[in-house]
Image (cartoon, rainbow, N blue to C red; front, side, top):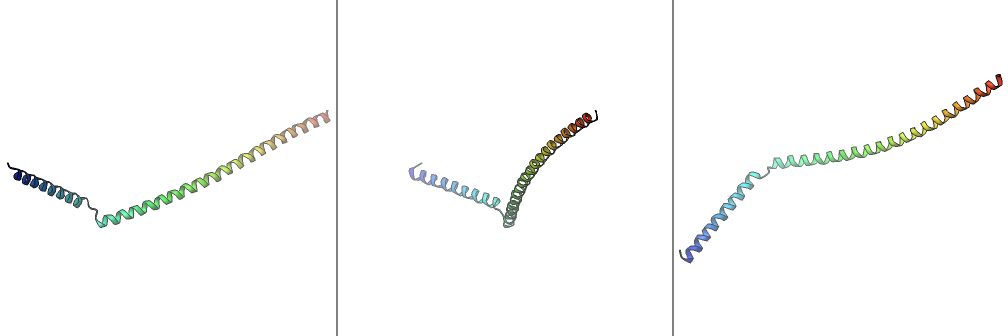
Length: 107
């Protein structure tokens, strides 16, 4: 095989390899191409996802605000309960002192 025949054979092999690669690329793009209807559906799903994320963020914000309100309300209720218990303790002590005083007066 002479040098020219070798160059021609190599060129033919490279050309055939190029053609096969181009054809394979065309086939892949042909079968994986997204249809316009599918694009519309994908855009609709993306919009719905965006709206769902916004709704989730709003719900999280609302829940955080509500939790803060309830925590504040619980703290106030606990403070009121403590004050009521102190008042009840003082009233019981005063009632006990009054009983003791009345018993001493009757005796």
